[in-house]
Amino acid sequence: MKWSWKMGRVAGIDLRVHATFVLLLVWLAVVFYNETGTAAGVELGVAFTLALFASVIAHEYGHALVARHFGIATRDITLLPIGGVSRLEYIPEHPRQEFWIAISGPLVTLAIAVVLFGIISAAGLPVEPSGSLFGSAQSGAFLAQLMWVNVSLFVFNLLPAFPMDGGRVLRAILARRMPYLRASDAAASIGRGFALIFGVVGLLYDPLLALVALFVWLGAAGESQALHLKTALAGVTVEHVMVRDVNTIGSRETLDAALHHVLAGFQHDFPVVDDGRVMGVLTRDALIKALASAGRESLVGASMDRQFQVADPGEAVEKAFARLQQSGTRSAPVVRDGRLYGMLTLDNVGEFIMAAQALGGPVDKA
Image (cartoon, rainbow, N blue to C red; front, side, top):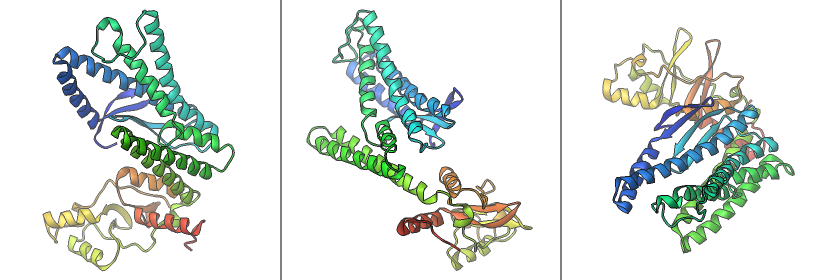
């Protein structure tokens, strides 16, 4: 994830922190200082925030380790101001696997709350939520607040609405009785219903709840869209979707020649081919930037991207499409044994998906 840094590696999974989380800590330090007026108050408040996010990280590792049990790797876990995000290689469509992966995070959160309750009870401290985190040190306010926040997170995460874990649990349950795509649409619809309720209540009583409603609505829509995309591309290879009529350019040609190619057609990115081998890709953005800085007579080789994505004609277009999205590039040469077969572009994949959805089935490009 952009603007994030690796903090370490735990259980074989990279743990990252996003820049906005650091900004959150700075902002909270100011808030705590304004409330308490002391450095000790700032330290206590920041320590509570870090303890809370340690609980969030444990929650995400619950998902990741259960996913590993089912043979699904986790790319990384990133700490954000809104919580943690564990990026699984894929979400399983087997209802039993999705159920246990989804429920494992909330169960870890519940376990943390139970352990904190045991510690508080054993110490003879009150378990009632304190009005303020900055009460007497003897009151156990720190642990009690942390326990109740974990209870709240447990309940919130089990709401049957995407992108909360409860939405995936609901889909897994529904998928035992109906096709997976239909179950996903049903779960997304229920999620949007919760979002409408949250939105109305939030507008009347609590603006924060309205923000949660927006978060839930977008999550439900995004989940449904992602699954429809996956369904449209299921079983489709790159060869079936790629652009076959591709103009190429040599690394020793000038940017002026590349500009003529752009103006003469609809192609934006060009494979740079020397002696029959793909050496790089000249993107439209790189071309425009180089024209402004180096001029028309500059050589293509100086501006082409040498670290480019490549797709194989026989691989699943879903995997190649995911690589393009993750790398932030629009296109990839389709290559096998050094030979250029065509180009795979985000635009072309998007057109294929729209056609498949309109036709309600496979698209024949023959």
